[in-house]
Image (cartoon, rainbow, N blue to C red; front, top):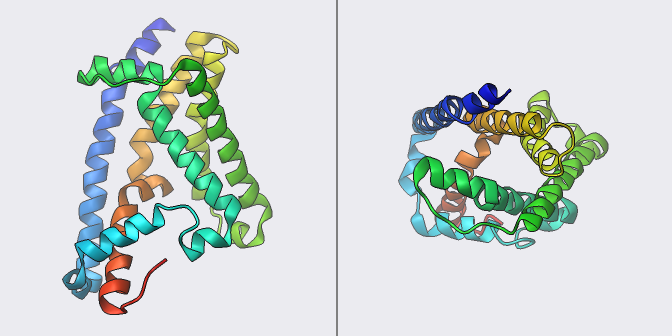
Length: 219
C-alpha cells in the first residue's frame, strides 16, 4: 500500500496536473474558436469595463435577480465555493504539498478549522443533491453528467475527513483521497466542472453585450 501511496502522490499527481493544464488550454482555445466562428461580431463589443462590472456584480451574494430568486441555492453556492478554495489551497496538508512540489510557502488553516470547513463542503454537496432530487425546476434539467460532477467533487472531501478522523485505515483513506482529488483535477476541463474555466469569460461576454449593446445591467 505504501508503494501505491508513493506512486499516486508522485508520478500520478504530475499526470493529473498535466492533463488539467493541457485540457484547459485545449478547451479554452476550442471555445474561443467556436465563439469566433458562430458569433464573431460579438468579439467586437467585448468590453473590459462592462465585463468586469458584470463579474464583480455576480460575485456579491443576492445582488442579482438570479441570486435573489433562490436564497438556499445562493447561500449554498457561495459557501461551497469559498470552502472549496480554502481547503484546496490552505489546508495544512495541502500547504505542505505546495511547498514540497512547487516551493510555494503560504500560511495554513488551523487543523480543526480545515476539518470544519471540509464537513461544511460535504453538507453543501448534500444540499445540491437534495435540490436535484426534489425541486422540479432543478430535477427537470439534471442530467447524468451533473450527478457525475457532484460525486467527483464530494469524494475527495469525504475521504479527506475520514482520513483525518482515522475512520478505517489512514493510509488507505489518504491514498483514496489523493486519487479522487487527482481525478477531480484531471477531469475539470472535460466535465460540468469546466464552468471553473469558463465562468469569467461567460460573465464578461454577457456583461459586455448587456452593457455595451443593450445598455442594461445583466444582473
